[in-house]
Amino acid sequence: MPSQENIRSTFRRNARALAIVPESAHRTAVTEVSLHDGLRCEIQEGPWRLVADMSEKWGGASGGPNPGVLGRGAIGSCLAVTIATWAAVEQIPLDSIHVRVEADYDARAIFEPLQYASGYEQVRLAVTLESPAPEPELRRLMEFAEAATGYVDTFRRPVDVTVAAEIVSTRKEAVA
Image (cartoon, rainbow, N blue to C red; front, side, top):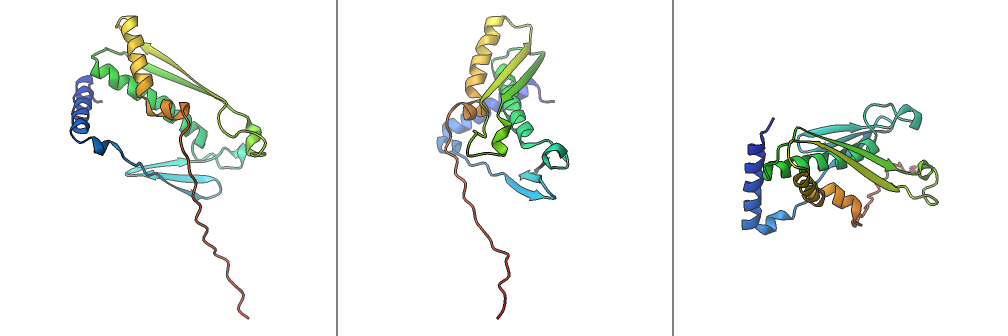
């Protein structure tokens, strides 16, 4: 497991590199998702391979977590990692970090998407930090981490999302 010193030095090195070449800060992440076997999705980015599936009660095979679990896991783990990173940078000792993610939604949206909003109505993140550091220092850490967490920011502000569909017909035309 990387030490706080390793995390701190990596953070500082990357910050210096971006300060030297600021145009390198703008990047595009690309994740590929393919549907296989009913509702099972294979997710790939670089060397990482994940699976998402719906539970049997929703028509899937329960072959992996559903997309909602992965999304909630993304925001919770992003916050935990950002807290740990800033704690390392600021040399704040942490014994543990626990993030609980709660998301309210209307399940009717999957059946009537034009009548009900399909996104979350509210997302709540409850963070528990265990540390010997003074509470004001931990509150400041949380303020920095919350501002620096990409998925918290993504959930909070409107982000332009486009969907481009390429339709490939596999229909065979009858020969006259």
